[in-house]
Length: 312
Image (cartoon, rainbow, N blue to C red; front, side, top):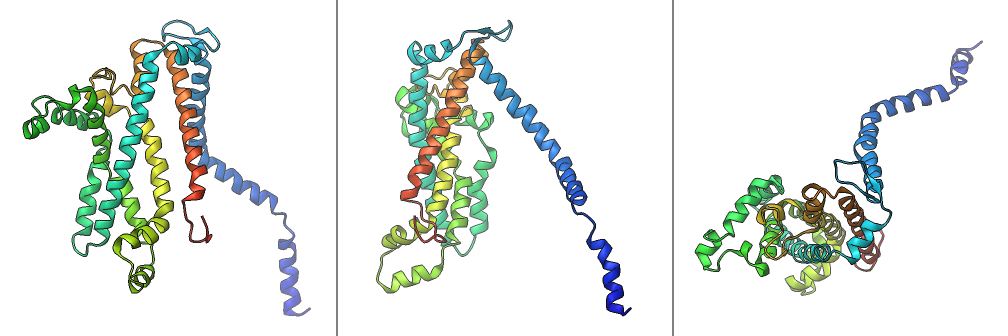
């Protein structure tokens, strides 16, 4: 028997060993490593969601057993609660004001940083720093002091306290969100650096102005990043709570101008102890955010350009 035949004979039995046990062991190891996440998702997310869905059909005050009432919480919400609709209006107004302003400022700063040759890392970190603070209570309280009677804005412009004026309180809260534009700015900057420079060089040869280059090159090539930031910031804006709570001292004032949806949900659930009603509000918010996100994805087909696909 030759050497080659001997090696084939040695390898033959090993090649015939079934692979299913090996695959099963690997899958078992994968599930072992995934088990903490799966357990956490089930216990901390799926189970509370199921309980919340059940409570939304009950009258529950945190102290007594839930009493099944069917759709009463939902009918009361839509037909008998004027403050609910004021909270919806305040939230929608906030989203329409804060999200476009934040994204516009983030894009402008990202364009400025892209053109910088020195100090880019420093300014990028400086502009990103407010986003690291998040919507913390301490920052929101400082913001309230700045826009309150006798605060910085009042001393500089003599306009009085914005947080005490129904027409300006919501705008003051929106400015806090706009100020924390660091996260979308970094994403915009990363997207801008991926645009080929040859496109701008060709446009300059053809005599295109900077504005025309921005509209014809930057916006289309950056549209997937714009869409990503738009979806992310819109979802976050619908869930804003801390700034409105701090600025209005938890009341949503003045005149319910900062009564955001989440703040009213908190008031119904943890202040008035109507946890069943608050659960129903939470599920309506979830469905609304899902619907808005679906609309954004649907409309993105007409304006988001993917270069790898060659179309919109």
